Length: 397
Image 1 (cartoon, one colour):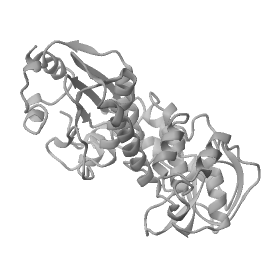
Image 2 (image 1 turned 60 degrees about the vertical axis):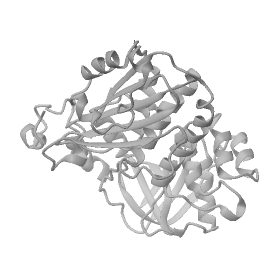
Image 3 (image 1 turned 135 degrees about the horizontal axis):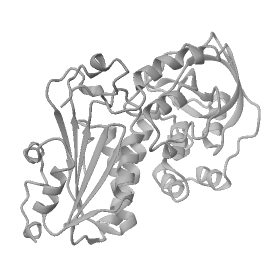
Image 4 (image 1 turned 45 degrees about the vertical axis):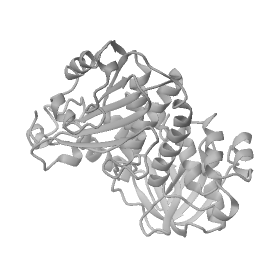
């Protein structure tokens, strides 16, 4: 177990966290380059929009502008496998503009932001700021990193947003937002749908309103997983114990599928020295669970990570056309020094279920294998687990 003061010992040169390039230095080194590229005016592509949550229901909204356009700059579904420093450098080129609006506002400015959110490709805009953007790179456990921020004075779309006909048809239908989301999910990725949900175009006319980006990310993960679960609960149960794995950005995922009706349990084990456990001396294990019928309360212990991992698992089960009891073991190691958003949880879970599984006839065989793939002792998880405390005949083969 590495010490909590890993960064002090390393100083960016010994690569103790396992990263080839120091993520903290990447953040610092990029600042002078970005500052030289920004002014109180912007002309270029808006990749999407961002809706803040502070001050709700009067919140900040505005386009995200690409200071320098790079492939995949606002497409987290393409980021898996990129180095920490690459993600930070790329996202530092995303300028967040903001202007205060009420969530139910129907202004021209809101309409223009909605068009930018609906566009499948970046749209050129002109923006004038009240002062030069400030570079204070923002990091979040939910949303993707962003670079400079600026208070908007004026904004103008200078080309026609490229909105798919299917999307226009869906958002103009007089349907509840959850039904519109199901239709969009048939053709588009979750990150694009999140922007649409945030922009306030979904739902019945009287219920339309802006949704803060961090809320829309988790809400979408929840709605889509519930949609998939209605089908998963009808599928045949798996007949073996399957173990799936994924490792990325100092996050280690080991996912166990067991014969039985749908149940889901998610563990997050934060090592001392990782971002949210920097001051801890011992590993902190968080646990959330839901039975066959589903949850009735928000998973506030783990928050967005719970819902992101669950969606990845549900997508995998839907692809298999199977149901199972599921345990996700997520261990977050010291190298996770800067949070880059919940997308990496979702993509780790997706990646795990895409990889070939290890198959076992009994639960003990599966757990013995899992012990070789995780850092903590399995007993640390057993004492908290609501699924592993169940003893079923099928577990013994």
